[in-house]
Length: 65
Image (cartoon, rainbow, N blue to C red):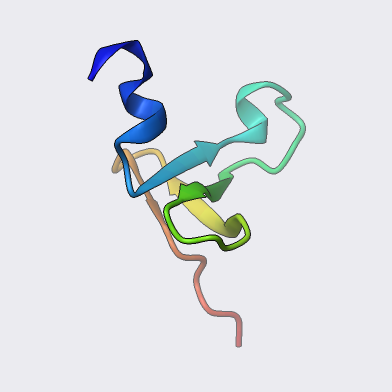
């Protein structure tokens, strides 16, 4: 595969970005889930997700009602 394997091999690449990791006043306990690369020609997908650090996981936001 060589050094460019990650660029060519995956069908999709998902990234998690937490603003509060860089700025403590920004969106605490929230993150962006970004699907940045997909084999089919479609736009980048993005979703807001919630951080549950006591379980070391991310989850959907609780429904508001």
